[in-house]
Image 1 (cartoon, rainbow, N blue to C red):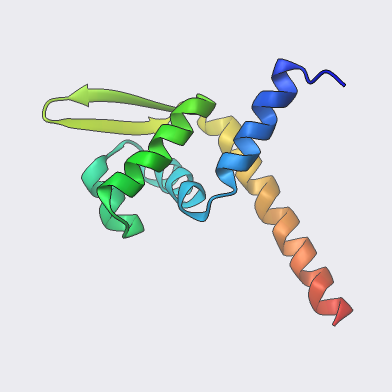
Image 2 (image 1 turned 60 degrees about the vertical axis):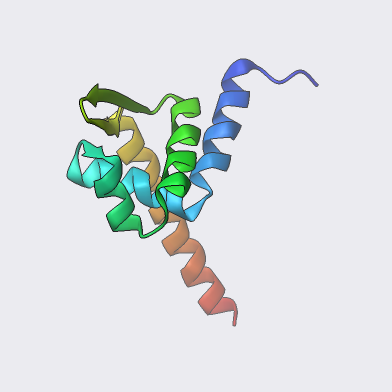
Length: 105
């Protein structure tokens, strides 16, 4: 079976958002707007190299943008409307599946 480019990119996005720290970074950028590395690091409470690794993954998905404003680099969500919709859908699904799990036990 041949996988289309669109399906491949969708699977990459799902995998990257599957990391709790990456997911948290995306939510923060949506809520707070452009942030620099130091601000992001302080809020997610992991090392700068760790945050840089997650930002690199997000760059691969093409959903974040960045701009170097000496001496810092600022990051923000490229498609906020679409990303909000995806995260809202994920939150809704998690809520529903959590209720289902509680009901089953």
